[in-house]
Image 1 (spheres, rainbow, N blue to C red):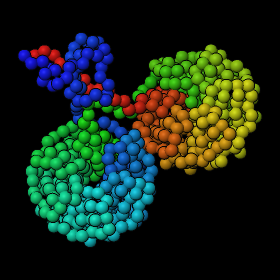
Image 2 (cartoon, helix red, strand yellow):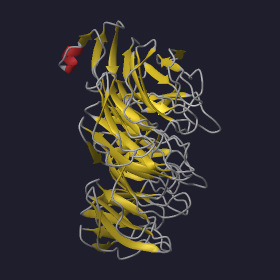
Image 3 (tube, rainbow, N blue to C red):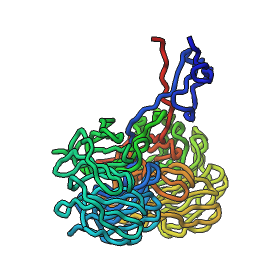
Image 4 (spheres, rainbow, N blue to C red):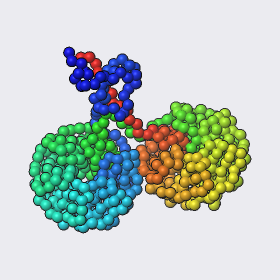
Length: 598
């Protein structure tokens, strides 16, 4: 019998631990831990990504799974939009608005060299086309035939738009980076078709009325090939002529089924998580992206073919607080397994400690209060200022926690509440808050508070985290119903305005550092107080993160890191909640199979 070494030219590795994620598919090894032979196995699956900021459908899309744009489309009330969002593989950020009239549209190209063409202005079909450089859209030359619901594929300097509705048209147009020229007609003229591939190797499929027709394009002519298995409106086709995926669509109702084309035939593969149509898809058959659509949703789903098992970032239920409360101090206190919440409304001095599973009662504050600036750790916490009554009774009181009891310290210089803090018990900064002037900042050295440079913008009801020399203040004032998008970073000496949040934020929870954080829920604008939005920040850009389960605001009870955070309590409908949620960032692990004797 031949040995593996003779067949493959290499020995089977003997390992005391499993392979790392970087190892190649099919690598066989012997596990000393499990006393068995194992190998890494590739699999395909959809996983949840971070939600798009605003629900819409029929948006133009282009790029890859880790660098995509989503432009235009229609909102749930059928209003057309010119907004653009950008995806970085983790979440969606705000991009540059389309230059022309708002529209439904189709897209192609890349994040830094994108193209949209055609669509609907809200009153008429559009011939408009625009180019994207990753920052701003520029008007290009118009299509020869105005239309919507077309197939669109290629790159910014070599693209194809085919078929579509203005009535129903069969016309094909090619773009050379400057102008559109007419090509040969498709064989099956339809609207609501999908398009993928390149100018010289394209693919179209589906359509309305419901069709399974598939055609290939060689840069000159269209050729009819094997039909899809499920006839449908197929707006979300992506990939290459020899390797494409169509996701969701509409038959007589929305569907969740997905098919893959290999250049000859269509095969059913894993469904998306929920039936959807008029969604947008981009990427490849090994790293695809599908988002939004109808029924109205903000979902993002990623398709992977990989040797890794990908567990998407998500919020999960944790142990409940013993007593429901809002505006309890936590700020950036502790970790997901060593959390701390103190004070809150109804006015209380109660302290609770979290071990990652359950909350236990700790020593009470000496001065009961809510809306406290909080920072430090579970065994070395700091409570700065706050409000001692349900009304407007701000205090200058400051206390330190040693893991068992609170001790009075020197007061802050200016009484306030709804301030925030960052840092440690011996090196902290507390900032913002109300009453006016809202821009106060004070440094704490473990003994006393010293007035520092003021914030540039008003920050009451502020969220903050980080350290005394690298802090961040997010959102709040002016006041409801319009909360601020202002963000400032602290150097230990001065505050600098940086990129704003994509939505106004107040009363939010926060966890992490100045360069890596997650912002949880909070109020955006009345009546959207009990919202579930979560945003990430990487030190430069804001992007969406998976939403929390329980809509709430007044989230002083939060802490941890950008990939392992917790939130506890808050104001929820119909009253304060004791719910705790834990966030875990995306993780990957090698998909291993044990090889057994047959």
